[in-house]
Image 1 (cartoon, rainbow, N blue to C red):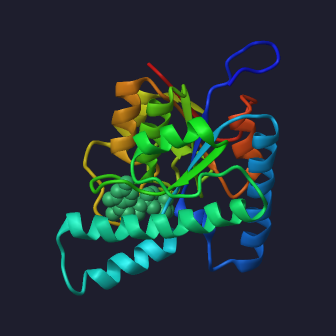
Image 2: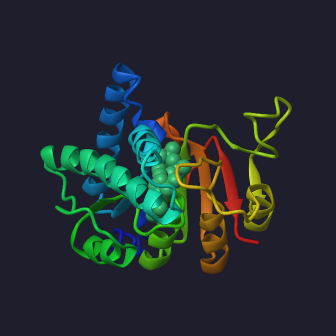
Length: 242
Ligand code: UTP
């Protein structure tokens, strides 16, 4: 895609943490969904491409704990989690289709397939792909497969912190770090099925391999997502390539 100055406009990728869909906060969620739809329409109106990777949130947590009553194998539990991410992705994909967006009519099962669909559609919405990682990692893989230089990871915390703010009240928010600094914070222990973290360590390692810059921000405020996607200063953590 080329803009009117002749510049190639890269495809943009955003991971929406499933917690942002917040079924527990119905009214705010409706407003948030509306803003997100406006953002997608705006992107499409400018002839740009947007890949959206949706997390599992509450349905994933519920489904994984239900499944744990029958089995404990991680691969199987991840498979259940993936189904929940695809459920959430379908909600967003259908809602964009309903307002006439040029969104892919299917939820792709791999980032290769998603990158291909982005050749013919302005918007592709997907969830998880294979066991062993979260949708953060999927969004980094999609950025890599689309040749996108960066990826926005929208969660429900304002920044990456220097330690876990859930357990350390003195944790400091970080505005700018490198991928290797982020790798030190996340560690390299893989997440368990349904376990949440600031950023999935697998995503960080894939971002290092592919040289993908990250923006980690609070996606409850859609303006922050838009600022990061538009290349404007944003509230959140910029994670630069070393
Ligand atoms: P999420 O991507 O939603 O995990 O995947 P998350 O980031 O911790 O949570 P939210 O939704 O952003 O708050 C949910 C679960 O689905 C499985 C994993 O078990 C994960 O914990 N999953 C997801 C995979 O195994 N592979 C994938 O590609 C995606």
